[in-house]
Amino acid sequence: MAIAIDEGTAIAEQVNEHLQTYLAAKLTALESEYLTDPITIEPLPLSNYHLNQVQVPPNFPLVCTYSESTDKLPQGVGAQQEDFEYHYLVVALAVTANQQEDRIKRYASRLLRAFQEILHEHSTLTGQISYLFLLRKAYLPLIVLDSALLQEAQLHLMTASVREF
Image (cartoon, rainbow, N blue to C red; front, top):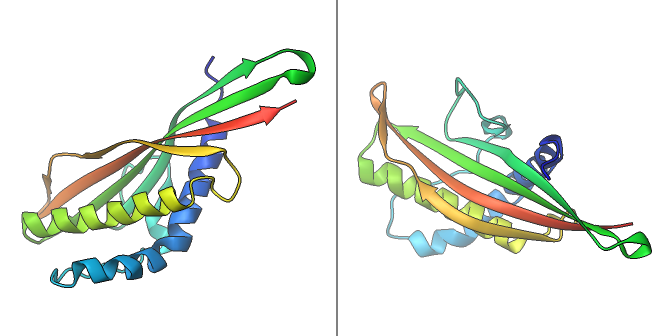
């Protein structure tokens, strides 16, 4: 039975907070693996993180975290009743630059990898949920935006929480 997406939006907000909090340290930790790659990735300003999709992006790189759906499945009866809540989220990253195709793809790939590792390492979002699962990672086709290339990459997530009565 589907319930209000607003509960999923609260989880999406927590995902964004974790990405903001841990991105600088994760980029530093990953830097040693990319010593031969001249691309430098800096932590993103807080203004680049958004909940829900943005129609007119104010700046890039852009991170939009939004809830696609939320399900609640009651289990048991009486004192033994539990609710399982599942939130399906998307973390979408959009990167644009007037640079070579390979360079913009590598930038997006490295940033998405950092996001993925942060969420793996903090899979309970500081105890707010029971589990966070990566369902899939997707790279959308590169498109031309004005005179620059735009790469969008996405992490599709599912969170699970158990609520006891």
